[in-house]
Image 1 (cartoon, rainbow, N blue to C red):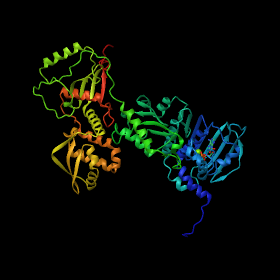
Image 2 (cartoon, rainbow, N blue to C red):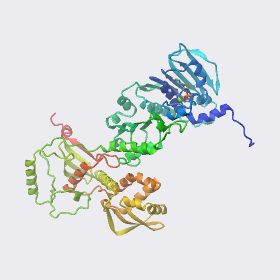
Image 3 (cartoon, rainbow, N blue to C red):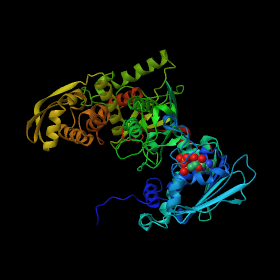
Image 4 (tube, helix red, strand yellow):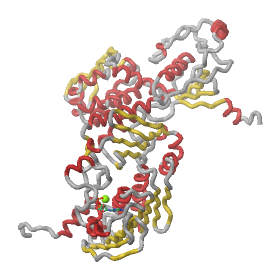
Length: 584
Ligand code: ADP
Ligand code: MG
């Protein structure tokens, strides 16, 4: 091989460049539909054959292309959307690089037919392998049709990377769904190999959301609409109980552009981290709007990434607002009371007050069992002088089922609480409050615990000593592969300290260092809370159960455990009556 330098022919150069924009049929569809949207289309029709490999056709009713410009439209770096570098600072259209049609013409056969709004006749131009045919008149209503056939016919190497027809089809489908979520007022239609695959008339947003995500999502999503300075975050987030095992229903738009941005992705995950377990994925459709000059969209040819001028502010805004919206999910206030109801007093027969090791039990004031009769008498007295004292939302405990569930009675009927899940949430929220106030109550271990860990983990424990202390963990390095645990959060002192510390160190390692530790504190606290929570199969007395119920009512996010599972459910009397066919 000679080592002399020569210029590449323009076709090869364009084919190389095309690789960045046209990767597969779905990227063709994205570029073409974005062009239609930029042209102000109200209706966009997409037709594909063989997953788009054989043929992609996109037709719109937008403003069309002037006949004199048709040839230019296919030329590289030709665009009607910006003029100079200054315009790049405030791009409002989806396209601006002027390379999509040219790239397609370099790796496929392209036929472009268009009738501009103010022109009588439609014109058509074809190009293949970078060579154009002459312009010819055509029949076409106002608007544009682009047909791309035989993708990669002249670049077999690229062709090999295409996946099965079904995969390509699915990707095309996804592209349209995504774009449709950003343009509720435009009708979309997708036909795949003769089959109507997707029909989205211009809808009210909720109807389209139901079509694209699910009806359940619309019913169980929290509406977000927050403004700060010149930023606005709006959209819908699915409740944590809707979470999925795949991150396949996550849509984030920046100024109407589909974006897969690390920064916003991180902010969103962070907001959900509070309520979701690792491995579960939230469902959301979110729109961030900000002045175009505050975001650079010219980062990558596919424009899937953006760069924010003030990344920190954007991150904090997205995280803060979502976090708040999610926190508002908790047991709702009780309806008016229904009598009779059980007493919030312990009725276990054990005469000696039992010292509870459960951290929340001693927090809540309850009467020590005097006599059962006395308790009942007091309860009735209390009812008489305060006849309309409300039953708390989660009611009063009446018993425990198989050491797993607490059964309680509230004004509506039966409340069933998953006690481990509920306690985990409470412990977590308390740790969070304490650590936010920089006052995690610590308890010194009577006998310091020496743990053998990996050297990396021991290094980390040493480097992060101060940060860990703010989480309530005092850990010293005591050898190349050993650490000594001296103090732990008082809330967690009863649990398995060794397992707790190992998990926290593993998390720290996964997070990759101290600067990210502060940002990820909540994840660490969640890990910790899991270790401090009451396990299933522990017997609780009624007082302990009631204490847990009251604590749940006071706790943010109490409707789900940290893993996003529900912590309780309610069976109303009507539900139960229905089960027993009463009154039918
Ligand atoms: P870009 O979108 O970045 O400008 P493209 O290669 O995608 O570059 O398109 C080149 C030009 O062709 C656009 O700037 C636009 O003027 C015109 N064009 C392409 N598609 C359409 C369409 N569907 N309707 C009207 N004009 C179009
Ligand atoms: Mg374009």
